[in-house]
Image (cartoon, rainbow, N blue to C red; front, side):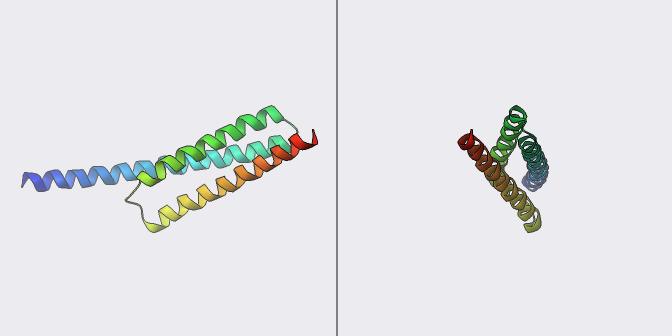
Length: 108
């Protein structure tokens, strides 16, 4: 009886951990997407220092999400697909920012 109760508590704890990880990853990806948007705006207005700071924030958010995503097991397919979609959006925006920075360096 005690083993069943302990097992149930472990399952409950794992589900809670997965929910918390999902929320953390989702919020980090949202922050990363915001940083990427701000970096693009800074680039467009010629504020290179701000662009670097925002791009660094976006890169850190992307790296953190990439590290944490494999640890989340108990997600529904739609939840995982949503995280993967945001991750891909952020990756593309970082590539665009990087390409813009290279172009800027070449013309300077």
